[in-house]
Image 1 (cartoon, helix red, strand yellow):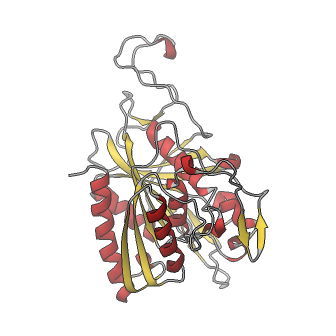
Image 2 (cartoon, rainbow, N blue to C red; image 1 turned 90 degrees about the vertical axis):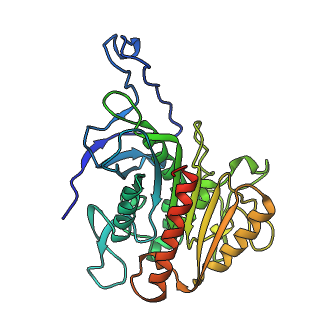
Image 3 (cartoon, rainbow, N blue to C red; image 1 turned 30 degrees about the horizontal axis):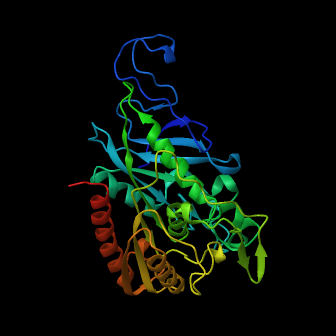
Length: 345
């Protein structure tokens, strides 16, 4: 059964400034002197809405779709979590020409993995938001030529998708009911990501205050160093960032964007605590271990690390064997961690 969506089109460019709601129902000069709250700059979600598709303008004027799920029993403002999809993208998709690259998507229908996480968050009374970083930028998934320059720069987990994450955070902070009361606890939002999305969580949580004055942003692919194509990290919103993050089997090298984490030259550190899930049979785990050493040495957020012996990359989406067992355990750990960081009893 497909989900029905209420759709709103909005256009946002970071940084954003929002008008505050009126404290009472007296005439407000900012809304023409009419009775009621000032809803200028807010997004009013109709009563009873559960699944909402919003569009928000991120970097390069790309309008990304964001699916937001509001638990059915919400009355007061609720905590939220932004979910960054992996290389398979946000939507249900399939490979129609048997080249091992998905090329057809079902728009507005979340992937099975994302749909499962939406249900988990609904059950915990946590608002969830799923920004789609790929298909409006020209691809269904991070595969083939999109894994390398120049296409990879258009969907970069190091300096594009972090802007998508903060755009989504700002959208959540604008959601109100028709009486102007907020739907999301603005200072109580976490972020979760898988694989390429886990790498995006790292870049989102990066503490930009530690960047040296003479730092030059670059990335290296197969011996070629790129500088002109680089974008600086997404700035922290004026209202603050995420309270914590969870990363599943990320790529932690970032092609030396923050320096090399395995030779002591990386400047990487986070402004918030995070949990990371690593699989022993994943080629990306070695660089993640280097990143964890860097974080320990550089300071900043505290890492909670879980290793899964015998598990492989993308184990969260697997349904059999050791991977399935790892998925069940990691999900239990993730929800407990997020509930603690979001101050949910």
